Image 1 (cartoon, rainbow, N blue to C red):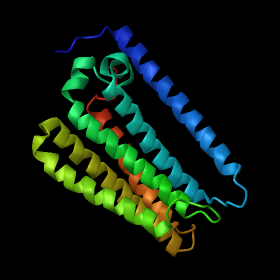
Image 2 (cartoon, rainbow, N blue to C red):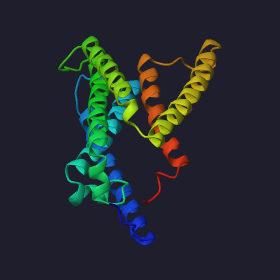
Image 3 (cartoon, helix red, strand yellow):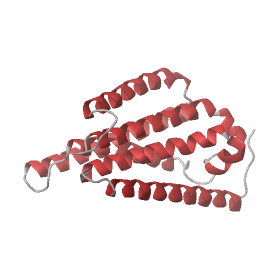
Image 4 (tube, rainbow, N blue to C red):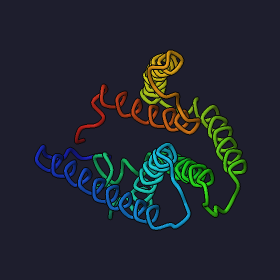
Length: 219
């Protein structure tokens, strides 16, 4: 059972969510950049930093949701865009899966970025990091197919909308960037740029699809 919050309380909650996200994200990126800058003999390229940043966003988003799912009454109803704790409990199974997926994908993206840095002593090779990411994609696709029937009409439509938006953006990006590079007008994409663009654009498309249905505002 859900309760209807007052408009003022809803906007305060939205401001709290935005503030917490900004502080956590900004602080985390500052720490990460300090670690990157402080490593002697390690030379990060722009494409590697961008991919690491995309991975960090996924990881932070998954951790943010995970904390809310674990403590729906203490933190979840304040941090997440739900009317109350009971609604979070009702959606706990799907949200927990999404949280774990985002954390795993974010960590894999960061690992791949770090493994390709010259001079970095990563825990795995670049090839191993690549196969870890591929394995996660295959597993995630299989789970999504299995869960498709359990999704309600709203979530099915959101998934289709986000996929369509992401697909159109990526098509335009590939045509313009690839064509411009072939014509000598711009530099061609680094291989890691393709991964960053794919995951970054799909995340953006998910927010756009949710926003179009009024799901990004205060509950």
